[in-house]
Length: 223
Image (cartoon, rainbow, N blue to C red):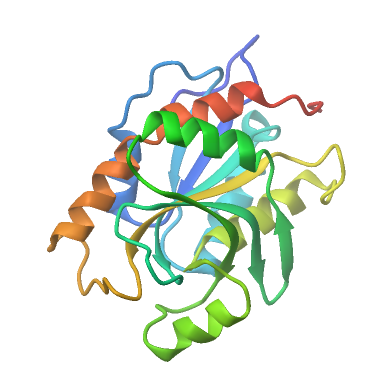
């Protein structure tokens, strides 16, 4: 899975994704410069699988204090988005509640440096239990969301619950960074079979240095 926590190591970083292709992209990126132990966890598709996998991992003593990033691909909801654009969530939304993200501005700056030339969008990221297409996208956009995926909201909600400290000043640091793989004007049928999917894959491979910079910059007290 990744470099395990050990004595004297900094706080761990858990990066959660759903799909094998996302896992491969994140695992094959530049892993140099991590300030502490890091693992890329493949949860499987959907909010329930994400909840189970993240809960199980954070229940292990060695990952108890981990910061958590939900990553992978997503569907962009706003007109003008393109495959390869980056989404940095200010919050994730789901029927069971909203989770505020940590250090959004830090992540945006780090991603601009790590993946130059690709647009970075910030705003609410909404969770779904199914692939969203057609008119449903417009409805989600009308509610204020800028992108949708199936696992980020469940991942972050579970991570915060595992910390037991809610969204207060001592809450577990969490973030969601997604790469747009399709958008209203660029709908993708199968990932990896068209240019947009390949572009999104390359961007996802390049994000790890930004994740490590965010992790290094966290100033919140750790338990």
